[in-house]
Image 1 (cartoon, rainbow, N blue to C red):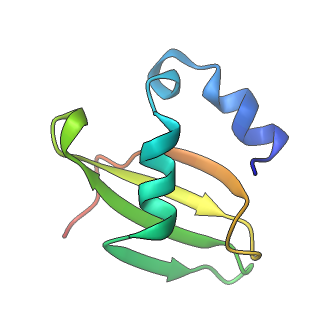
Image 2: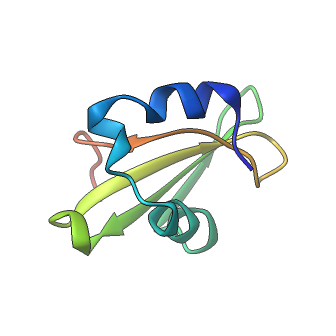
Image 3: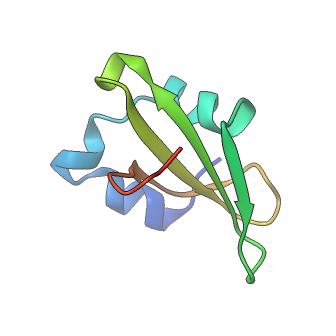
Length: 77
């Protein structure tokens, strides 16, 4: 599931390249997870197919609904 905000952001050229299987990878097998004060959950995954970039996915508190996703250039492992 995704939010309307995610769908709107996905229309951007830099976000349109993010594949659904990459989102699934970040949701199910993150390398890091942080729970924000508002209950949203940030998860990161390495995406070898995207030159090893780190994908950050922000989920709603239900842990399933994708609210935001982007390549996180500032991620430090």
